[in-house]
Length: 215
Image 1 (cartoon, helix red, strand yellow):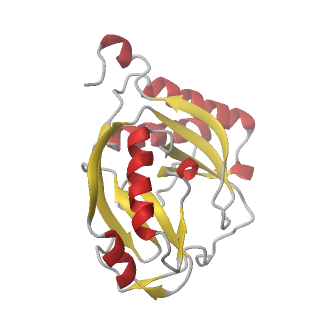
Image 2: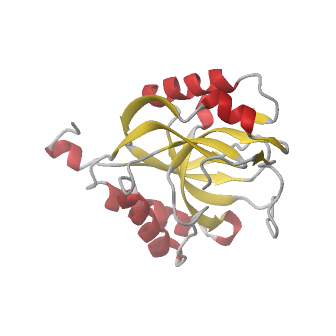
């Protein structure tokens, strides 16, 4: 992921071989309701607002893409229930991971906040990978490899120079921390609104929270 792309691109342009008419089941950490995330995103959006060539991500759609489970029409309802149930059992005993936000990441198709430090969210990824395999017999796929957890602030919607975006947003926003307390299984059909339908919400640390609070 280049820290300073020269050119922004249209995120909504289909990738080769991509089928935009088929919904996919995906594991997302939905973070728009976290006050720390919403405030930081608002600060970033304020710097970007008015720039051409960007689609600002509304607060309610802020998320961390974790794993693509597969096409929705390739799974039965029982498989989906099994996948979600297995994830609940695995994630119940994992303490909610605390991430640090503020560092800006740039990609030709998007502007993002890093959700680090590296490896902090790995146990959550491993849990949903195991749950996906156990429930559906499929491994699931990463949107990008290696996995770089991030929260997208804006998507590119045109081919334009990246310089004005980088100059406006800079490298960092005010630093903040947040403990991730759930992950959701959603059904998403790629389109320009980038919306989804929630299938299941899985708490993180439901059992461990009874033993010791997250500091």
